[in-house]
Image (cartoon, rainbow, N blue to C red; front, side, top):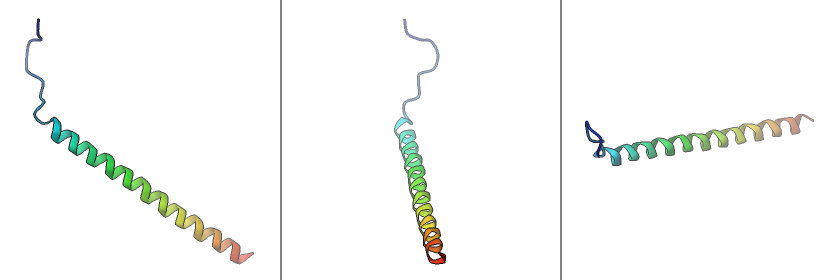
Length: 53
């Protein structure tokens, strides 16, 4: 016996997957850029401390 009611919507599945992947990639890039910015800031701070001492 099959389920009654509306069929499952699979026509937009590829589109949805594409959008989700795009979102995941964007978030991953943002994390990487934040890490890079933090590294630069920490490095500058360390250099400043070294020159003061």
